[in-house]
Image (cartoon, rainbow, N blue to C red; front, side, top):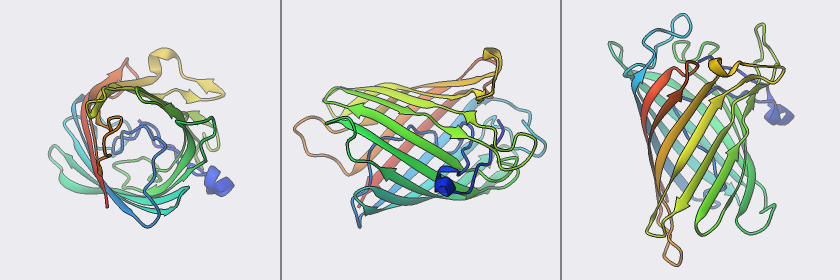
Amino acid sequence: MRARPLTAALLALLALPAAAFDRYEIQVYQGDLQEPGHLGLELHTNYTARGARQPGFPGEIPPWHSARMTLEPALGVTPWLELGAYLQLLDAPGRGVRYAGSKLRAKFLAPRPFGEGSFLGVNVEVGRVPAEVEQDQWANELRPFVGWEGRWLLVDLNPIIGYALSGKDAFRVALEPAAKVAVNSQLGFAVGVEYYAELGFVDALLPLREQAHYLFGVVDLVEAHGRPSSPWEINLAVGGGLGRGADQQLIVKTIIGRGF
């Protein structure tokens, strides 16, 4: 998969780069923020049990049997702004554990736009990673998110777009959507599916056989109606790519977090 570096800041921010399916932070963003002045810490891990053994570009470490870890601290600044960072590590066969880059992010949340339970916002990331992880080394992202969460159901869409700053495809807009649907059991956990895709450029979508589509079955720790909320966040998932365009066919991922 290629990295697609993006633009500079809100148009500067709105022009920030988005990456393709992120191997380090496989997550569908929702409408939650740390409260102002409060800290949060998440640990993202995933392991490619079955995937490409050959590099996708010269010098890349292929995903086969690679484990990735991302430590994500976050700070609530206002009721509508959260700032955070990603610190990434990679453990690849024959390579050992190595630094895989770092990123800064800002997450903005609008007031409930469509009534109770609805959410709308955007997450902006900018980062620099080693060339063996991302071909162009700028692993950046603009991720709008919109959805609704009720007592029993969560529906969430992240219509991610990206475009490169340099090279032959500079400033061409690419589509990389993600989505999630989950059912709250009211027993303290939810079950659902997460979807991620790389569809190509708006002006030249890839043929279906060349697109990358990823599907995961997920279990989340969630609040049961009428019970106290937990400071912990847990997301457990197993899934992988569908079709020839995906370079990872079986992935196990976890997110474990806590607010302070």
